[in-house]
Length: 283
Image 1 (tube, helix red, strand yellow):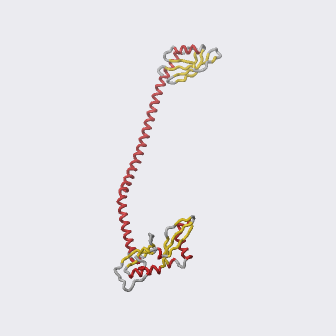
Image 2 (cartoon, rainbow, N blue to C red):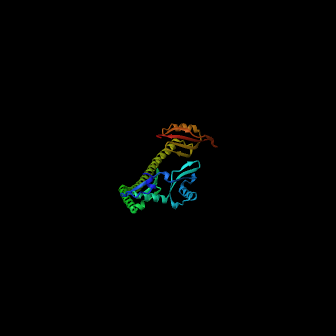
Image 3 (cartoon, rainbow, N blue to C red):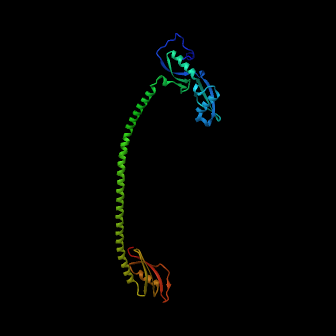
């Protein structure tokens, strides 16, 4: 669009076709371009700093102009931001000139900038905000319906998961009860086995004591007998020789490998105190 169409009024012979709504890309040369500087740490407050700089360094107040910031550049510790400024009266004149040519101005852009420096959408289409609200509501309803259709299987799966979780808890409790029952049965089996073992050992002990009574001569006095299913240890004293007693026990088939397992000492009666260990037959 020629710049003269903005800055020069239309002649009396200008035609007025059906009005068209346009978005205008205006060359930067038709704006006041300034450079605003700020510390790098003030990046989040550029808009406020630019407004204050405009108020103090130009004769314009923010209510008299339209302004827009460009992309900031870092130079050392400083941010340099371009700012374009247009007087509201100039933009109003652009609107009048375009209207004479049958065009209605909706947005004004600094050429190359994505955001408009001035937006008259609400004036051109007063019902546009309501229409956008209705469209947004319809879009939200559609999204909600899609989400409901997408999430419904998840809700069903969640309910099923709760049921399965309850079943799992019940099965775990049942397994724990069965495990306790198994442990009780094992304990009973262990007690029964220990009882039977005691009976068997008692019989073997009685047999061993009987064999010892038969094998030991009268001059032997037994003080203690330590019994196990594999071997027996005898502590006592003899009027004669402990070594001869070992030889005598070796002649008995029920006693295997008789041996002196402890020190031999003399008694006041000229006997010997001994400790003899024998392996039992069938051990």
